[in-house]
Every structure is written in C-alpha cells, then in structure tokens.
Amino acid sequence: MKISLAQTRSFKGKIEQNIIHHKKFISVAASRQADLVIFPELSITGYEPSLASELATTKEDIRFNELQAISNDRKIVVGIGVPTAQPEGACISLVLFQPFKEKIVYSKKHLHVDEEPFFISGENFPVLQMNSLNIGLAICYEISVPEHAEEAFINKAGIYIASAAKTGAGTLKAYQTLPGIAQKYQVPVLYVNSIGPSDNFTSAGQSAVWDKHGNLLGQLDDISEGILMYDTETDTISKTILQ
Image 1 (cartoon, rainbow, N blue to C red):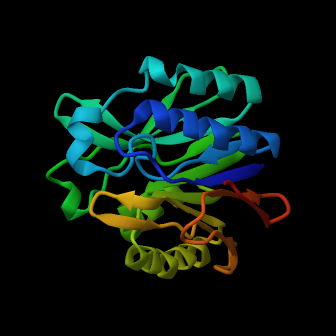
Image 2 (image 1 turned 45 degrees about the vertical axis):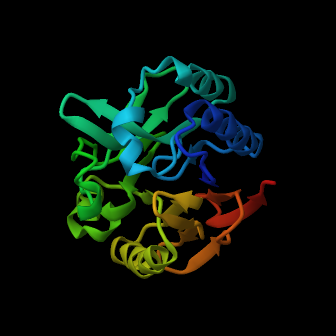
Image 3 (image 1 turned 45 degrees about the horizontal axis):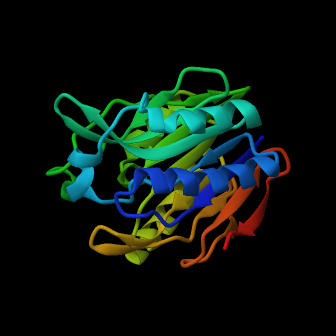
C-alpha cells in the first residue's frame, strides 16, 4: 500500500478555495499510485478555532461531492480536515472519502485545553480498515494521550497516522513522541502537519515517517507544500514538492 501525506497551506476560512487546492494534491498522489492521502488538521478551513462554529459542516456537504468523485475515479481514499457540526457544537474531524462507499468521519476525542472553548469532544473509531491493513488515526493532541495509541493497537493497528496543525515547538515534541510509539508497538508511524498561518501561530510542517523501530525514514521541510509518500511493502519514502 502507498500512503501519501499532503503537507499544505490552507486559505483561512475559504472552503471552496481549499477544495480546489486539495484536488491538486489528490491528483498528484493518485498519479503516483497512492491508495490513501491524508491532509493536516482542519485543512479544509485552516486551523482557525474562532471560526469553527461558523464554518462547521457535515460529510454530506455538497461542496465535497467533487472530492468523492475523484475518490471514485482515481480509486483513492482521501482524508481531509473538517470542522463538523453537531447539536452540541463543532468537532475537529477527518472526513474520509472511499471509492464508491459511504463517507466516514473520525472526530478528535482528546482536545487540548486551548481548544475546549471552541470545540467539543467527538466520536472516533479505533482503526480504519483498508484491504488487509488496520490504520490507527490520530488528530494532533491525541498523540500525547497514551491511551489513544493503546486503543488503536489493541485493535491491531498495523500503522499509525497523525494529522496535525503544530508550531515548531509542537512539532519538536511530536518528533520526540512519535518514534516512541513506533518502537513500543513495532509499527510505522506517519505525521502530516500544515504550513503557514494558523490561528495565532505558524504551522511548522516537517511532515515525517518513522519505521517500526522509530528510525526517521524521511521528512519534508517547514516551509514547502508537498507530498511525502510511504510504501508499506518496501518501507521506503519518496518526496514531491509542489509549487
């Protein structure tokens, strides 16, 4: 299986513009035979907590129809970062488009204290099943909660993917945490972060892949948009910088 991490810069609050931008990355990933492409946290709106209630939507938003069409046409699973609307408030979610299947939603259960005024804890699932591989998903702060990873691996996750919007300091901490998860559970760990302005900070990119021993296989830089692809069969990565 080939998994692409799409390191992107979002347009603040511009859903339609971000969809167009996402399509570019999905097309490149699909052209390289990716089976799955994952975007950063809240990629479709930018990480903008104060705008979440205004921008929150659902997986059935008709603006997402073209993403489902691309998933169908290119036979690729696509995970985008979306604030999803619930009666009690907005969740931080990954909406996953599967070829010719129902869209599914993974929502962040463990919120950072700074997010609690703007978001509610959501419902997620232990693993995403693709072919014979179980994939554990995480959104940003969840990688700092040991019980979160533990649940994924109790459910036999064979790989762990974290979608984030982190500062340089936050990324440094992630680089300390994620190799430990890889070593403890003996599975590859993937990390996709955004770049550019996010809320009151700058996202620091450096999307990366670690092997099951916690060795860094490769990473992107902190300023460029691009795709980092991991091949689960060969345990190798490739990079594509997008201008």
